[in-house]
Amino acid sequence: MLTGRVAIVTGASRGIGRAIATTFARHGASLALNYNSRDKDMDETIEALIAVNAEFTVFKGNVSDTGFVQGMVKDVKARYGSIAILVNNAGITRDKPLLFMSQRDWDEVIDINLKGAFLFSKAVLSTMMEQKWGRIINVSSITAISGRQGQTNYGAAKGGLIAFTKSMAQEVARYNVLVNVLAVGLIDTLMTKRIPREILEETKKSIPIGRIGRPEEVADVCAFLASDMSSYVSGTTITVSGGLGS
Image 1 (cartoon, helix red, strand yellow):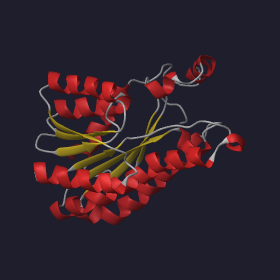
Image 2: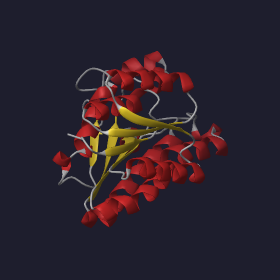
Image 3: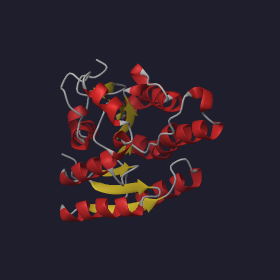
């Protein structure tokens, strides 16, 4: 499915990023994985990849750092010769009501969730366009569509990611570079575990499927979008939410 393809995955140390990395590896992709600060979590991802005999390289750095991003992409291309797939998954939250949100809370969330996707996409596009094949998958959130109290910064970043996806998709489609975005609902990750239990249980009641999703379920959709099977899909927002927000 992905044999011979080289994929960059940001935010790969845990949760959805780890699931995407291991799923891509099982489908034959060579991986260039980014993480920023969670060394122990990344060690667990590495163990999971070794267990499936994956070909991978790890790069530690901040996705909003232009120099880091350009250096990583340059190194990946030098090592593997091409870059076929980019998954912009890195993301953080700094939840507070807008009235009490600092500019730093705002800037950090925008930088990681939105600026990082801009930097990586810009860095890989010329390679993908030259080879007439590319897949860029941006990981957004159902919050971008429905909103959530305390997440004006996160919602703005993830909403921007959807608009960014649609515009970029139109610019590069004629080069067979396809760009899509996932609006992800409640998934069993560390980020979800930070939600107060009473709020989480109440939200679960509004999910038509009746449960929280698994990271692997998001990864499976990513694998489809990263493959030749998605050859007529671009500029699309795919909601992976168990029906929440539909």
